[in-house]
Figure 1 (cartoon, rainbow, N blue to C red):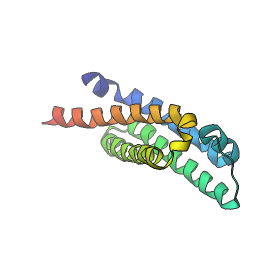
Figure 2 (spheres, rainbow, N blue to C red):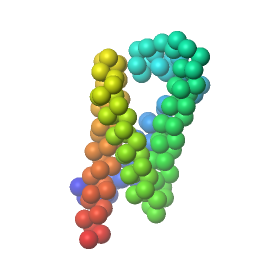
Figure 3 (cartoon, one colour):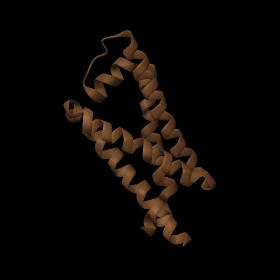
Figure 4 (cartoon, rainbow, N blue to C red):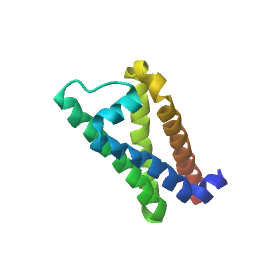
Length: 129
């Protein structure tokens, strides 16, 4: 676990940059939804919801990047982003079984990020004690 604490800045930076790519949904919601979920937008409200989702997820990516460079806020950024990603994973596993074939890369990536962030939080607590 020391390797995670030692490299958390770079791990958070990398995962933050990848997470920020969902900003693409703000610019091109139809293309983003099609590439991520394999589905099309059918209602005008769908455009707003997908754009909002893309923006909020990219904010979590920005939070990871901020935490990578600001040690005082790192723990808060890791916990907040981890909770957000856990929520997304649960929602996909509970309600999104139809989309798992197209979302598997995202599910695997977010699971790895959650594992790294959880390991960091637990390891940091042990170092402090």
